[in-house]
Structures are given as C-alpha cells and as structure tokens.
Length: 606
Image 1 (cartoon, rainbow, N blue to C red):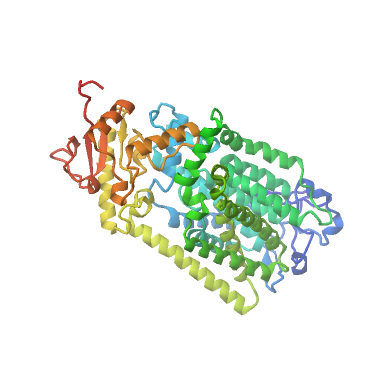
Image 2: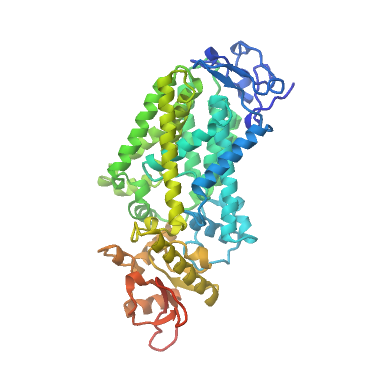
C-alpha cells in the first residue's frame, strides 16, 4: 500500500484500501459523483464508483485537469510543499493586518484572566468572576499555561498565533478541496472576514483575539474540508475536538453536520453510515467541553436556575441571544447574505458536488437560527422556559457559516468561464477588500485596543482618536498605580465603562459588567452586586457609568466586600467628591481617572 499526501496529511483511501489521490474531470465533479475519497468507513464504497485510476501525487505534483466550468483544476498541494506553507503564511499575515491590534482584544481580558487563575488559583482569587466555576477548561488548559511564564499580553499574542494558524490551515484546506488551486484561500479569507463583520445577525466574529471559539472554528473548517470530501469519520472527530474547546460552536456544528448527512448520504448508493466508531469517538472527545458546561448547574435549585437564565438571556447577553433586541439593520444585512447564498447555490449546485454538500451544512445552521427566531416569540408566553432555551446561542454558527458559504460562492465565481459571472465575483472581492480595508484603517487610526475603545464601551462613542488615546494613557496610569501601590489581594470599586482592570493590575473588582460568571449561584451574586454598586435607574450614559457615592452606601460596601479604594471616571463624577483622594497626587497628572479611599466606619475599624 503506497501512501500519497493530501492537504494536511489526511490520506485518501480507495475502495480497495489503497491510498490514492484522484484527478477528477469536469463530469466527475458534477452531480452526484461517487469519486470523493473517504477514510475508514469509505472503504465500503464499491470500486466501480471510482471510474478513473488514481495518479500518485508525487509524480504529478501540480497536475491540471479539466473543470466543469471549462477551466482547469489543479491538484491540492501536499502539506510538505512550499506552496502550502507560503499560502498559510500569507493567511497569517492577512489575519495580522486585520486583527493584529494591541492586547487585549475583545474578550481576551475575559478569557485569559480566567485562564491565568486556572493555572494559578491564588491570582486575583477575591474576584467574583475569576474565582467562579470555569466552563472552557480545555481552552484554559491548553492556552493558559503560558501565563505561568509570560505576561498576559505575551500569552495573548502566542494564543493568537496558534488560533490564527488553525484558522489558516483549515481555510487553506477547505479552499484546496473545493477549488484545487493554490492561494485562492486568500480571496476566500477576505470575503469571509468582510461577510462576518458586516453581515452578522447576532454579533459573531471569528478572526480576532484569542478565545475558546477561535481554535474551535479552526477545527470546524478542517471538518468542513473533510465533509466536502465525504470523509465522515474525520468530520466527527474534528467536530468533537471543536466542541471540547467551545461546546456551543462545536455542538451546533455536529447537529448541522448530521443534518447535512441526512440530506446527502441517506439515499446515496453506497452511502456512508452515520453511526460509526468515529462518531462515538468524536462524542467522547466533546465531553471535555460538555461535562464542564453541564456541571455549571450542579447545586442550583430550579428557582435559582430560572432566575440565572433570565439574567443571562434578558439582561446581560440579550444582544447576542434575544431576537427582539436585534436591530432591523442586522436582520436586513443577514437576510441579504442569505439571499446571496441561495442564488449562488442555485447557480452551482448541479456543477459542483462539494458546493452542494457544503450548502446543506450551512442550510442546517440556518435552520438552527430559524428555531432561535421562533423561540424569540416565547418570552411573552413562557419567559422562564424561553430564557433557558435562548441562552444556547442559536444564531452563532449561522453568523459565521452563511458568510463563509457566500465567500465560497464568490470565490467560485472568480473561476467561472462566463465573463459576466466572473466579473460579479471580482466585484464582490473588491467590495469585500474595501470593507476590510476600512476596518483596518479605522482601528489603526484609533490606535487603542478595541477593548478600551469608546465605541465598544458605549461611553462618548465617536470621540476623536486623540481623545481616546489620552483616555487610554490615563487608564494605564491609574492601573499602574493600583498595581504598584496596593496589596495583591486588594479589591477595588471600578468604573462601569471599562473591562480591562484585572488585565492591567492583577487586582480583584467587586463587580464588572463584562465579566459575568456562568454558574447560577455566582451569576445571581454578580447581579446583586451590580445592582448594589451601579444605579438601577439609567437616565443617561453618564448616570449609567456612575458608582454610588452616598456615604452610607460606601460604608456598607467597605464592610461587606473589604474594599478600600474607589476608582472613578472624572468625566462622570467631576472633582468635588467628599472623599480622600489618593491618586493623582499633587505631582501626578491624570485628566480622566482618580482614586479615592472609602470612608471608615464610625469606630474607625473595618
């Protein structure tokens, strides 16, 4: 048995057990062909279904063969080939240009502080979020250990490199098995990035900072490349690994893949079975993500669980979960993408089996989102049940996969032999490139990490780059004071409009809007703290960002949480607080932030 490399080293196996790689002619690629190569269970496909002899990859490294569109297809490049390496490297460069902002990016300050505590339980142990139960333990285990030796910023960059590499390898392989040409993945990436950013329904993103869903999406892309080839054993194993990193992204992908199997394999001659050892192996791997997620509800009674679900779905994460909270523009832009997908699939479904198979997977993700939209009507009739169901992020996977399908179709148009269709493809790529360029220019001009930008934090959005940079410098200065002038176990009251205090200081907070625990008991405590510290009646942006400065409240907070220091945003509070200001001192300058010591109890003892 001679082994022939394929992209990423997945061997191709023919029906007689020989490892091969086929050069498919146009009519073979077209409707209902049986010439996609499988692994393991695929050996059951009759040999007669592979009509042409295989060509060893080593002897014809870049063999060009006729394509259904009238052009040529080039064999996928070996994993050891320089073209593969260069293509992946260029994808990494593209991701860096698009998302290489200073750390922390969105959610990095959320995930990596938890990862650091996972490996060092004493770090920031008095913080309600950091010390709470941990869901994404696979991510924390594999991506968190560098925090023992590196700073959080260095860990973030290392994690980004690994996460982006997984995305690049997955996208390159998917492009290779769909188009059989090198470097088309670059166009695919630009189209996908633009589609996700400008066409999402519920705020999903893929290429950005490092968090659990990034490696999960990389594994999903690899699984899709195997799905297109009908190598279902690899699909289940890779999706199980994706669910181990992020149980919702990977779990929904498993369900969508099962829907795809039902539509593409169920009635096929020589079909591949659904229930194979690989499916159960993938399920076993997914337990690494599923078990921690299920353990979140342990110890909570039904009332606590229902209340926690309401807080999560109707208060804290409603912008991702609750259809009634989505803007009309979000629906329109996503509907436009969905219509583009339908039109493109109608154009190519009879010519390209790979596109047809992928389209069924993406259609299944749309079906999941439709269920989520229907659940959006449920709160009026069964609010507790709706809250429990809506928290499963029904729109997340379609937010990423519909733009991916549109990107695949537009890339396919670039290869079309019809001039008009090809021109539409180039126009789409030009538009996507312009949108990506606009995003890069905007973030570069702002020159502050997205996690501290005014637009993200919702405070004085649209402020000039100079203003935002000054506020960022002031934030770094006040965080530096907190880190160098307080004990490691100190607990602070912090401004409402920030989410990076722990990242820059290593100190705990009484409560933080961004850092919401996952387990019901801690989530309920977080909610009570939030109501206690921040105003319950929101009159305007400035009121919403204000910590209560009433003496009795501050005395109670000091006694209850052992907090001594209050950091305020001077744009909100002004400079005339009736408290002892600790920072900035006379020789220090900080236009935006100040630190006050909370009043002592009447007897002078905490």
